[in-house]
Length: 423
Image (cartoon, rainbow, N blue to C red; front, side, top):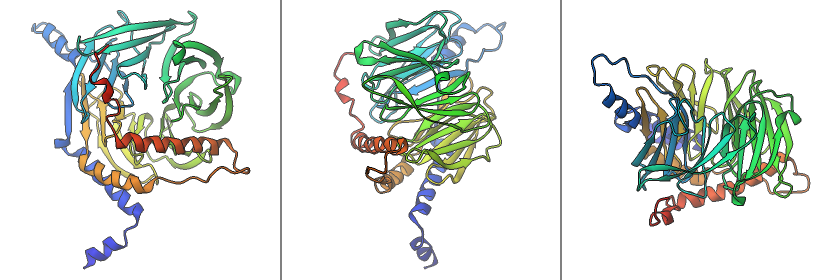
């Protein structure tokens, strides 16, 4: 009787927290974890059978990205290699292709981004003046170069990102140069600006588009956060807002899949969740005790996963900031990257000895999916006295939530590619 009474007074927030904690418990269960060896390790082992061979050199993962459909994954390592995965309908590993020194000896890929409108196409940057577009051909076990775009020799691009609609591509340098390309015009270079035009910034650390591709968020080394708006007619950026978000470098940014929040993480050990309707701080997480290496938000917009410098994964509830649990990865010496799968309560991390580790929580996903159908927040309709940029961003987010529902109603929206030849 007491248990029934306790259950009857649980709020929807309590139930959400309980479901999130169940998800983390499921992640921590070793039966729900899978280590996948890298082809690089296999090749090195085959070449080092001699008893005189030295220790196997490590190769830290530099960039790791999913295709928005969840059907492809690509990652790069410090040794210059790139690996692409094909995932099946249940988002399990189907095929993988490993290419060593993909852009030449002693060169590495610092950034990877998938074209949302092409299932097997991604672009890379490598701290050079080149951007390279690649096509993955799983049938022939190859990753083929489609196009190379060269900018000025002094431009060193270290970050590139398609917007979620696939119309725009942004390429950024550490010094603050932003180059905008129009994808459907054969990647035509539209404009090149420096963020110093908007703020006193000398170095960029992170960039991310909002879900509609109309706004660009920029994290700087000094802790300043910039919000730029892209005019689709003039194809130029304008400053929406700038704020001192952190005391140190903004190492990572992530957008809520439902379009409500931006999350920023810093080397100063703080994480801030920003409300995109008001462009104000929703809450501040400052009990991490360590700098932030990477962070991501699960596909339902419920859980934040934060990786700290000493390789702990700390989980928080996105809506409330409540601490949920943690996973200790102290045995891994390199910086860990964490990415949640699209459409699944499942995430992947870079690991030790050239392995990647996958954590899955299927049961809790079903509970949170049921909750997600009833928990999508509503935003006020536009009126003449509600014309702030924050409201405009949130109105874009309403469209994002509609597309989110459609995507989750049919996770196989890219199935039309399944009968096409791989290219």
